Length: 419
Image 1 (tube, rainbow, N blue to C red):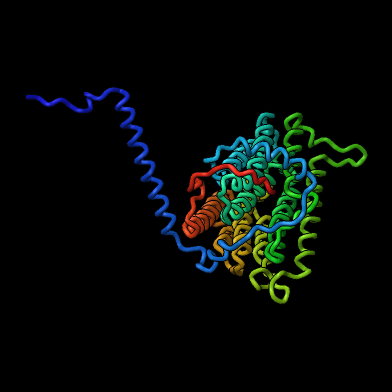
Image 2: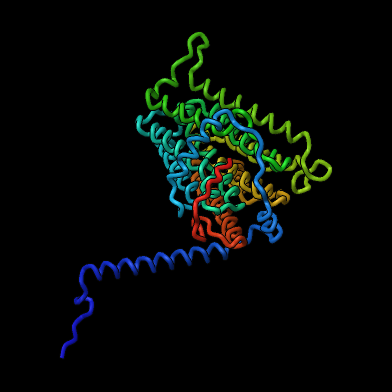
């Protein structure tokens, strides 16, 4: 007697359920394998650093000009977030939107030298606004769901360091500043340094201090630039009456001036001494040492840009600056971890490999085409940044017994809306 094939006896709905079940099993296996692969990576944080990260308490001082007005909007917006949404999940969604729209603008403007479609400028403005809003409500969502942890602050500042790179370059692309590559180089490097200096001051004083014009105001300025480009991208090439300088040069000068002023204020606070013993940093180390990572990065970036025989800064402006921007993000994240864990900074970091390799390649008369080398530099810096950030999050999650993108226990809303 012939036996029937069980697969033929199943209804379409049963087959669908079976396929969904198999897909879930494969997804869970993939997640488990990925977690194990991350755990097998070299350890980044010591036991002492993990303990100090657990003990860390957020401390800030100062209110920016727009914050009192935006707080009402952010309090209203957070009420629309479902209680199952983890604060870090909200932040990473906003960052993904911000990076995606910024990269699209970089590609379409051909190294910040050309105009592109109006809708791309508008999408970039929307991406930045969404990131700003989601980034502002993640702390409120954490208190609302009783899921506060040191990981939240670390994750938030880490995402900000990445966003600062893409937003700065995208802003230059929006006003076609790439036609003046060295001016764009200076504007971007000053912006990177200002962000680093703010966390350098925090590492020294133990408290993040905001000025009247700070991140929120800078982000709205960038959104304004994107919206002007949406209306008329050709506006930036026009000259200011009587002054006879282009509007895009004015934008660059304002970026350089504002970031230089911010850096000056933070360095002035650093020079007053730290909160540690004998006016040292929070880790009891020299308040001057954090100048080493950012100093070596600026030096190597300037050397590589100036001595390039193929004029890589002029030809591939956005790509060139993005490579060094990812290195900036890595060293800034190391500084943030050092502050929160009250630990000293290491003199060497794997992120220096890319900038050093570029200079060595130039010294030996371009063994590899500089344009090709830039792509290797970009991929390596991206890998190095992701490896460090993911490993830090995994180690801290395991130590605190929490999930990065999921709220572990059931949550109930609270009424605490403290900023």
